[in-house]
Image 1 (cartoon, rainbow, N blue to C red):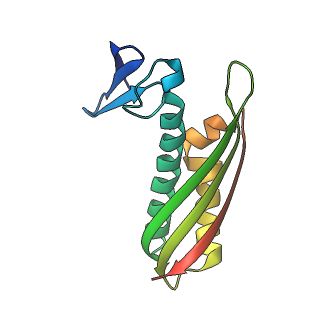
Image 2: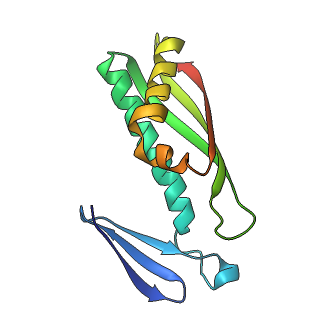
Length: 138
C-alpha cells in the first residue's frame, strides 16, 4: 500500500491514495490552518470507523442477516502530552435491519474488533477501545 502527501500551503496537504483517491487535510486554525479539511488524526479515527463498519456489514451479510444500515459513532480521547496518541476510543454501533438477533450483531462487532479490523487492532496498542450497539428494526 502506498500513499502520497503533497504540501499545498500553510498547514494544508493533499493526501492521495494508491487507488487514486484524494482528500484535503488541514490543520486547526490555531496551528495556521483554514479548516479546509479534516485533521490527520481525525482521518485516523474516521478510517478506523470505516474499517470496522466494513467488517460488520460484511460479516452480517455473510451470515444472511437482513441488515439495511450501519452507523458507527466514535468518541476518542488523546494523550495530554506529545505524542498525543489516542488513549481511549468508544464505538457505538447503530445497526438497522429486519429481525436482527443481538447475538449475531455482537458476534460481528467482536470479530471485527478481535480479528479483522487492522486499524482498531493497531490503535488498541495505545488506546482502550470499547464498543456497544443498538438494533433498530427496519
